[in-house]
Length: 292
Image (cartoon, rainbow, N blue to C red):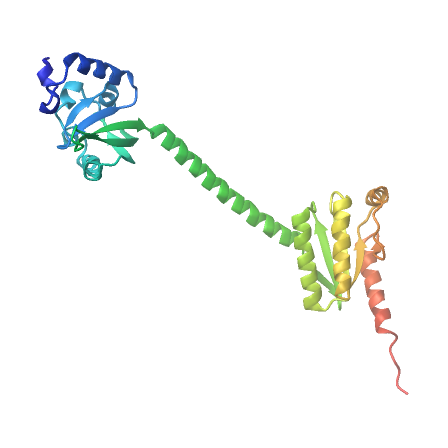
């Protein structure tokens, strides 16, 4: 095919050897590269661009986007061409490009103005990066992150529900409350238990609260500190605390840890704790007074 078939009037006086060298250099670059005049006609491109659109070099030179691309995509390409032509400034943006085999790819196109010796914009040069795989990975990562957020929200909601179910405050007698603690006691659960307990003491005017730790599997310094804090807070509200459910293993642990519960009353079983609380309340009320 003759040289004239590839060269447009704007470059027909160029040195042919220089043109071939330039074309060779462009074809060694894997990223698609193209050059357009102000009429949106392709006056140069490399093999990377030919592969992107699925057309031969001979078909592309002298053609324009609507000749080989879907109409809606060609309109987008022309719009951003005109942005460069009118502003004289580079432009870059994400676009979709459908090749002749019907495969649509996501591309990142950077366009730069070409000027003549007088400084006028006579065309543009575009460099394309295929970001389809990167985009798919990003979208997949975003979907996974969204799924993880949903799962975390579900777990948090279930945890909150379980916390509420495992830390009820029950009224077992006039002025006597029972709070059975079940499961591992971490800082978050301990804080929730404290808030629930203090709220119940205030709302119900409790005088004695029984803390049952039978269902707490491990009892260490942290758990002991949380319980001591709850007892102190209850005392500030005028409520006595009774700790039940401390077996031999827990007692040994507390001794080894040298935990000081001060004036906290302890009982081995819940039954003993309730019995003690009822007797304490009777004593506080005093013996019934007879009529003279």
